[in-house]
Amino acid sequence: MKKMLRIMSLLFVIAAVIFAAGCAEKGGEGAAEGAAEENAPVGETSNTGGNASTEEMPTYIVGTEAQFPPFEIVDSKGNVIGFDVDLMNAIAEDQGFKVQYLDQDFAGLIPALQTGNIDIIASGMTISDEREEQVDFSEPYITAGLALAVPVDNEEIKSIDDLKGKTVSVQTGSTGFIKAEELKKAGVIAEIKDFPHVNEAIEEVKIGGADAMINDLPVTEAFIAAQPGVIKIVGEPLNSESYGFAVRTGNTELLQKINTGLENVKSSGKYDELLTNLPKYMEE
Ligand code: GLN
Image 1: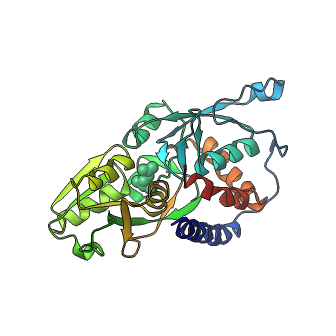
Image 2: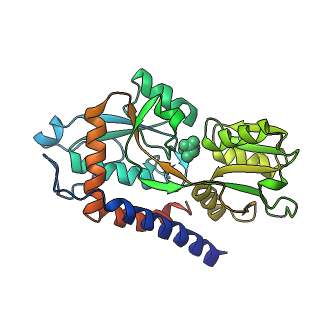
Image 3: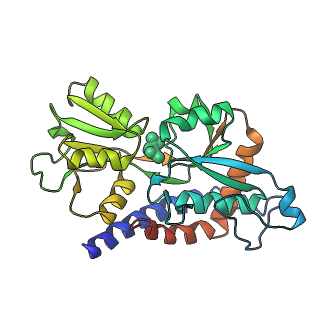
């Protein structure tokens, strides 16, 4: 199992690296103005560094739903960690701003951004046309896609073709939820059960309240890695999706910082380094 797990983690990393390599072509210009290249760590909560330049840095509140490994999770000390956090911290360091993470339900992130409670969404959020109408997205920073999962001992459901009349669990407000709605409208699945967090959607499958779950593939893989023998992924990925960081519509100043930081982090090799750390968040 452990071996399998490592292979799966590796496959994901390889896929992500290929994607990153493709994107790196676009980036690559020199350092942005004010870019700090020193290695001072940017904490996962607001930085308490005492030097003058740090104090002048703006602090942005980053909203995230931190039950979404390997992208964001809460560690045993209560800190938000994960790939999105590492990447956002690197961007913040590059662009000279501080970040403070606010953990909240996924479905509330866009409203929180719109009302000004948060400044950035970093939450494995898929870039979609529908969401583009409500927020502004950064350039994509990684690709993922949806996958179908069923109880480990289920031999009946092998792909979405076998979902006729079935109940499917999903996370509220996620692209998995939207996919399930499409399948329900098309007369395929009978019922959708949605939950604020992925682990609750998995739990529903575990207790037999749902026949299957639709969720982001790397995240389902991470849950399986942490808790083997409960669910398994079946069939091919249902699609391919790109994650982006989101800011309030029209907040071009911050969007530019994020995009420039992302380019710099990619061209410096830091992004690839962070990708190699990603599997460690799979087994938390
Ligand atoms: N990528 C999915 C979406 O954007 C799920 C994200 C999440 O739950 N954090 O809807």
